[in-house]
Image (tube, rainbow, N blue to C red; front, side, top):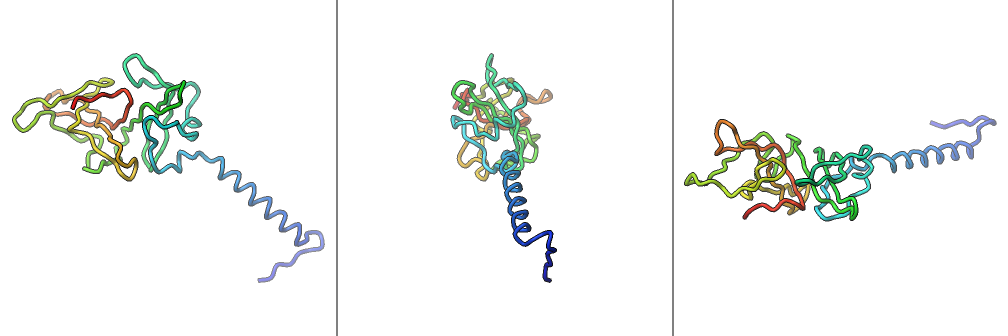
Length: 181
C-alpha cells in the first residue's frame, strides 16, 4: 500500500509528526509508576527506591517497632502488595510486610495457613513478640524469585481455640525484629 501525501502535508511533516509522537510516548512510559514494574523486593538496609517514595501518600507513616513510626508506602512488586517503611533520616529500608494471600513461600507457606507452635514432644517453640504478632524461626522461609536468600518471617496470631496453633496473617522482614533462635 502506498501512502499519498497532499501538497499541504509533506513527507517531512509526516516524519516530524511521527518523531513527536514517539518522543511523547517515551516520556509517558518514563513517568509511569515503576512500582507496578518492579519484580524484586528491595533489601532491608538498602536505600528506599524512588518508586516506593513516589507511592507514599501525604505523610503516611507506619508502626515498625514499639513506639516507632517510619515513613512508608504500599507498592506492588512481582504481582503482590507490600508495605515498605524506611528511616526518615538515612532513607534505609527498615521494614517490609505483606498480607497478600497470593504470596506463597518456597516451602508453600501462605497467609491464612496454620502453624504448630509446639515441637513433636508438645513443648512450646521459642517465640518472640513483634508488633502484636508471634514470630518464631521455625516458621520462616524464603521467596527466591522475589527476594533471593532474604528470610521472611511468618507473622502469626495464636488460635484462641487452640494456643498450640498459630494462623499466618502476613510475612515480614524488619531491622527491629530479633527472633529468638
